[in-house]
Image (tube, rainbow, N blue to C red; front, side):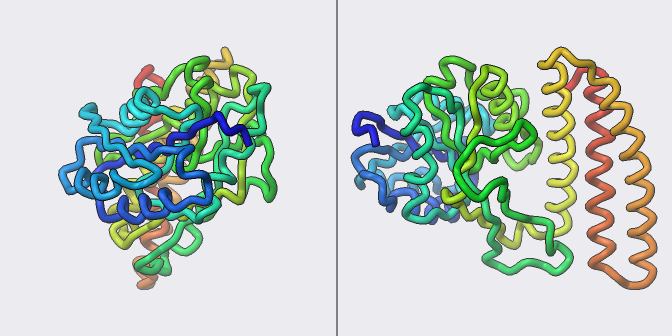
Length: 315
């Protein structure tokens, strides 16, 4: 372990002070040397007591610093963290994750053992947990990443999540910061900045690794397990996938028209099929199946909506 390297754990946050408190408790109790990392809370205009929660941890070791980022958007907050970070490796964590004491050590180990600078990012396992229980109709909808069982590089079709991701600062100097065009703003769920960042790192010839032992337990409270949230998330995540895929094709110098046309036709059929299945399930009083089918139909609507926008050159 290089004694000269310092880390910054960056936690962008918006309106989740209660969950942030538990995240900070875990992040500040790592079995990593406390004088070799700082914790940076980037408050993205939260209307709650995020500042007070951060201040309660300000006097500890490792130090917790609070920064207000007024420009609304997750990637604005991430870029502010890059600008403010004092560490040479920046570890991004969501404001609603719980981590074990070995999390930080396991996540940054590949980067600390990479003097040749061939690794541009390391992602850790993200495991959904349900403190308020999981409704039966959502069983199977949330799964861990489980890309591989040992630390190592990922193939190009696998992308780690920004909820648990370490990137050395030199990689941002080389490849640029997060794109704010693919942004999650406030409570909107459209995103994709982390996937686009990973694609740029790979395009620069850098490896992207996965560290399965670096576990982050992603809390899914009851407010995110209701039908309204599930449909909104399905719609926006479908939009994000289209934007990310189209950007990848164009970056590779390929036309996106074939992809857009094929996905449009497929999702038009899926929308009709899942809507019909939802109606049939409702008739026989299978309300859980009705919800599942409507969420799938709404995801297909998200694809259709964004395919039309992307065909016009919009995000």
